[in-house]
Picture (cartoon, rainbow, N blue to C red):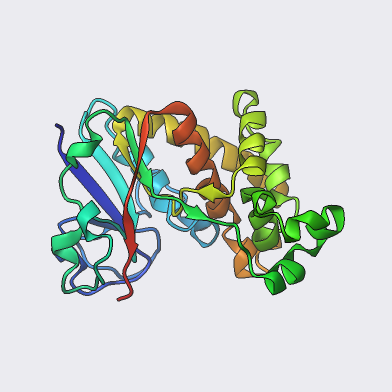
Length: 266
């Protein structure tokens, strides 16, 4: 099998993170160690980092580093979320044992697949008080949501946490071949694959970025930036949109496998 190159994106300096052997990258301006890949050189969107988060580096990688003729596996993780070995799922991870439990070579189970995405998180079973506080607009339209977990969908969760109707407006700007498929996806499922983390081959990564970033640029025309500054829930809207779209896109266009990941609190 091909080799694996992982890029760990962080907005802060994390002591000893280099021991993972991953490429450490930052989407932010500022003073970072020389071995950190920076997102503010070459073609970049560093001025959008506040709203795009780690996608700022993803864009930089796409425009400045991605080699579509390279057949190696390439992947992305985050400063506190890592791809782990399947047998490490139930280990309490920290900086001291992280290195021995993360994925560093392609796992043998990947042989028949084109892409690797995070094992999903479920969105159903929302606390009733939160559903009332944040989801009252949906409850007025359909009170059965309160008891029917099948109706506690990706769409409901997004509306509750990232602004009502924002997802609908963004979906309207997708290319026609994905628009209704994605709309049906977010209205039908209550599981999704989180964190804008994926592992794939270069040609597929190029297709993903070529779909994602033009869509987000169109979204800027209606959401802008200043209007998103009111809260954390909306400030990173473009990253939250990408997170849901990734879960849909890789399932539609690739033969995918879901793989374990872990949150590590440094």
